[in-house]
Length: 129
Image 1 (cartoon, rainbow, N blue to C red):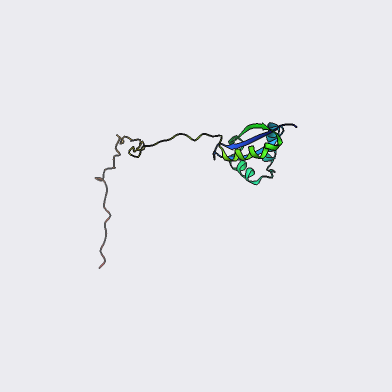
Image 2: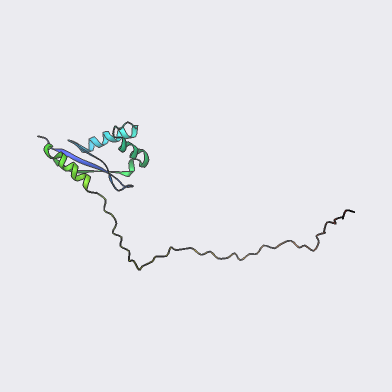
């Protein structure tokens, strides 16, 4: 019997698997899947929505392994449990407080001169009798 390739597609943006499939030729199958996605005709609605939102460049296709047909479901389930992306190792001490950097701007050195009021006349007002 011919072996089958298990492949998965992960999203850079969401850092999760968005698609997994089994096919004798994973690269060829994914190329066909991409044609359907680009045309907006993919029958897997969640994948089509993801593609429409994030685009082709968000998706990373990885061939997981070649397996015999009887082991396909086992490998697909393994794909659903693991992630291809490594989460960054961020450890922050509880006592360490990081203040955001704020740019300080210099006060302007030029001043705005106001027009002189010496030559202004006051309007005369008349009182009613």
